Length: 501
Image (cartoon, rainbow, N blue to C red; front, side):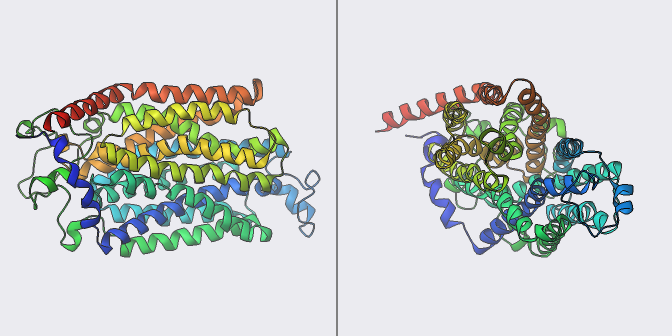
């Protein structure tokens, strides 16, 4: 009896171990820490906002200003009359960064599929490090303060940092096939959270010497990381003579093990002759176009869903310490330390949920269940008592059910979308698709930061959490067609297994 491809997948889970080499480990670590360093520089800016705000206000209103600096020099260079306007400008820089980052993601994905991924990633890391150095260190050393110059640098920084995520996801997608991808990418996507923790640690170590040294340290480490990536990263297995993913060397089982989850399982293998891109005579695949990538099944739905989910996830990233200080009256340092538990929950959630999706061979149902629990955890966290241990536990649970799905969509699912059957496993769609998904998500996150501040100011924090619940529910709504389809496939596979027994 001939069984469908879905029932021939059981041996695929063993492919993760049997095909893992030291090259896979090196690629995992290099891509992990390269994006961690990019996120660390973003977190540094968030952690030194109080110091920057103090430096940009006149000394007559600023008790923390250095007393040794000549009064005339300081007041000739101050930017804002009070700390409130300085803080508002810092928030504007966040929005500018996110919008330029979102635009850059759409472009960087296309560039990454047409140029060497290693070159693009290394250039983005080193160039972004230089911009961060100019923004936070050089301007302070030269006592040069200019709002338009700061805005220009942060637009450039957003564009340069956008090269990171599409490139690292594409490289990981080249090296790790469908077998175990959910678990591997779930664990690997903790790089952003690790970067947040690393950035907070580096900044806190040198902040007492001045905020400019926090930027100097993170920029130096990021620049060094870009150099290491340029000389050490292997973008695909073929660079060391290993077979590429999808190469049918071991028969049908190996081919199926590397087949992406996004393939149309109810279509016979013999009928899969259509491809968005034609195969070159020299076997070098061409990168697909932007609109062709948008037309791939699931790309638009997951992009819209991620816009809603990243809005919630990044709102916690930007506003959680402020919420804890503002709502409970806790010290800023205590709020910063406590907010780490949200990242911890996201790391665990992404890993466990990715593993479950590997076992089920389906992503959407796992996301749906997690997001349903996320609605309940958001409602519960909005009513958390004034207790640090209880708040930390509920925060970690919330991070588990929100950060976990966010990590899955931006990493494992993006890789699935970029390696589905319609592009015949071509690696040249990975960066473009990842840029579309993450770029749409970043637009949602940028708009969300303004909406959160507007809702909080006019209606209070409780309505902010109601807004988060609405966005999380919208995420489920956008992927509902995929949820229904994959549940039907699971039930169909179960019936086939029962008949086979």
